[in-house]
Image 1 (tube, rainbow, N blue to C red):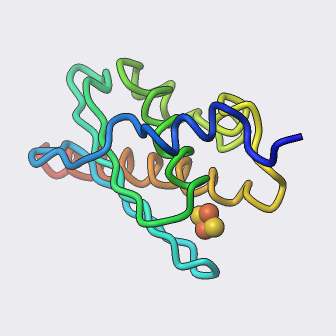
Image 2: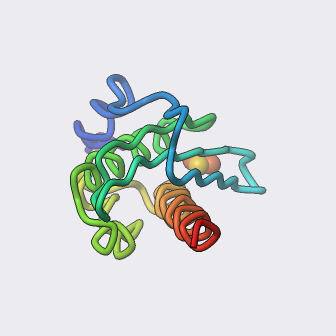
Length: 127
Ligand code: FES
């Protein structure tokens, strides 16, 4: 059996939503101290719906595929749904990751959570 699913390879080779949102409503950045990989997520939110999402990932193929899939899973979805996104759901949507690569999907979950926290912090300040 191949180590990586076709979906992982597809999202690694053709990552969706790569880039930066200059006027993002929420930005989240996380890193894994062990492997040194870094992931940054940018969210555009209107009326509690994630209208746009982009990412920059300096990391392994699984981290790139996880970020790409995670952006697809939350784009166009309500913020409340994005808050529930788990790394397991990201890995499942990729048809699985090898056990020792599961931490790469954790980065995607954490980056989105951080970006949402940032969004709520900014919203609080505006009040
Ligand atoms: Fe570090 Fe994949 S090896 S995120």
